[in-house]
Amino acid sequence: MADKRTIAEALGAIDADRIWFDEPMARHASLKLGGVVDALALPENEQQLGLVVCALKEKGIAFVPVGNLTNILVTDGGYRGVVLWLKLLDQIHIVPGSDDEFVIDAQAGAPLGRVVSLAADEGLAGLEFVCGIPGSVGGAVRMNAGAYGKEMKDVLSDVRIINAAGRTETLPRGGINFFYRGSDIPAAAIITGARFVVRKGDRVEIKKRMAEIQKQRREKHPLDYPSAGSVFKNPPGLFAGRLIEELGMKGRRLGDVQVSKKHANFIVNKGQGTASEMLELIELIRDTVARQKGVTLETEIVIIGDGR
Image (cartoon, helix red, strand yellow):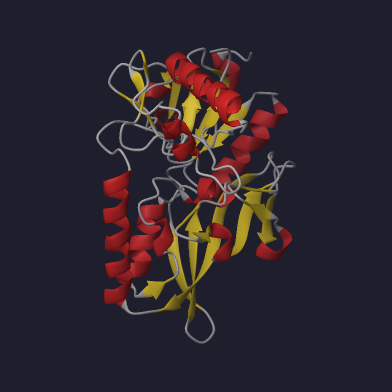
C-alpha cells in the first residue's frame, strides 16, 4: 500500500482541493454507504486524467475510474488505492452529420440525463430509452446500458479511451463486441468519452416519450430511499426481480438494507445501512435463487474494496 506522500506525488497534476485522502465513499455513492478509500481525486480534463494514470501506473498505485457513483459499492474494508472520479469530464457537444443525422460527443462523466435532455431540447431522437437511467456516459457504454428494447450499442459511433499503455485511442463501434450488460472494451482501458448517432425528430414527440418513460420508472422503481439501481442482471429469458419476488424475498431486510417492497431487484438503504449488510443480503438472495430456482444471478453493481 502506497503512503499519502507517494499518492500525492502521483496525483500532482490535479489541484490539491480536488483530492480527498481517507475519504468515506458513503458521502458520495448513491447508496449512501461504503468504506474509506485511500484517495478520491477529480481530474479536470482528459489530458490531466492521462497524466495521472501514467503516474499512478509508474508508482504501482492501484486505481479505479468511476462515473456518477450510482452503481458502485465500496466494501466496509475500504479500497487501498485511488478512486478517479470523472464527474468533471462532463462536456457535451452536438455535431451535424449527414442528411438528418447528428453526432452527440459526450465525455465519460456526463450524466445520461443531461445528454438525453440536451438531445430532446434540440429535437434529436434516439436516446430517449436512457431517460431516467441514473448513470454517466462512460459506465453506460462499458456496461451497454439499456431499457425498453434498446441498448447503448444501438446508438454508439465510437469510444475514446486511455489504453493500458496510457495512450489515448479511439475505438470504432464495429471493433467492439457488445453483449447484455457488458462489452469487450479492455478492463484496463479508461473510457473518456463517446459519440452517439441520433436523428432529427419531433421535439414534442420526443419529450412526450421521455415523460412516459419517467412515469413508468417512478411507478416501478423505489426512489424514496438510496439505492444503486438494479442489483442483478436478468438471466437469459428471465427477470431477476421476478425470481426474487417469487421466492418471497421482497421486503427482506438485514440491518438497515432491504430488498425493495416496490421492485425486488433493488436493494435500498433505509438509513444507516452498511456495505457488509448489503453484501450479505446479496449473497443470501443469490444462494436462495440458486438453490430453489437453479439459476445463478450475476451482480450488475460493481463491488470494489478489501474484505467486507
